[in-house]
Length: 366
View 1 (tube, rainbow, N blue to C red):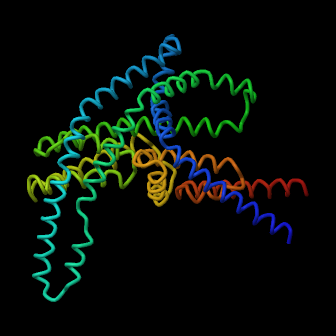
View 2: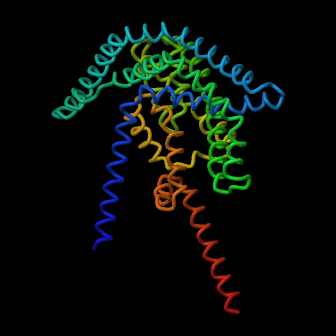
């Protein structure tokens, strides 16, 4: 009885601690979001920095070269997109009003051809077609707000990169050269860095193609649609769809149904080529997370950190999964978060362990 009461008490304490931590992260997102972006950029650029060190470039100089390059890219993006984001935000109410008019006309036309069906008109009142365009504006404005903390991001990134060159030596000195328990985190960080690096390259190509597509069709603000496609490509499965919807709706409002259809077909072709053909070949493996958990993580991290949390939802969920895997008491949660391939690997490992135990028992008895 006492053991049961203690277990219930510890469970309640753990759940309360989780709630407090989540609430604390949400309250501290002004500081945490720039830090997460700095870690994100450091994971992408750590391999080029280590490559420069192998070429006998001093660690400080290598880190400064990498950070200077990132600062130039961020400055260029800010200069190009700053005015466009402001112009799009100012024009957004007009686009949304025209889109509402088009949708209302379509609903009335359908309702007139389906006599006596009042549910069509009530359905039209529930639809908010301008929501997707508003979401695009929110994401882009959030990115612009985050870039105002460039000073904090850059300095955090410099210290992370400088620490990366010496962390292996410190770990070996602290835990021993052959510490097996550190293999999993090291492999995880390598895979995460590789995943983010490849994802960034593919996202850049996706954004470039989306920008060229919208520019060739004659859509307003092609640079914004390129940036949105680049950013949302970090969100597996649904990110590319979310990036395409605002551009298609704007094409419908600005140019007409034909151009909107061409925009939709173009985005679909880009996503098929890069998302289903090129990226899997470069990756060689998935993210190791269930598709349902990817979606839930997108909503959860977006609620905690805002739009930037949505963009970083997969790396954050992968990190959480690693933390759960390292404790036997929470390993089952990590298995549920993982993909079907991870579950099959776990079953094979258990079967192999059971077989080895039976063989050892047989040899001992004989």
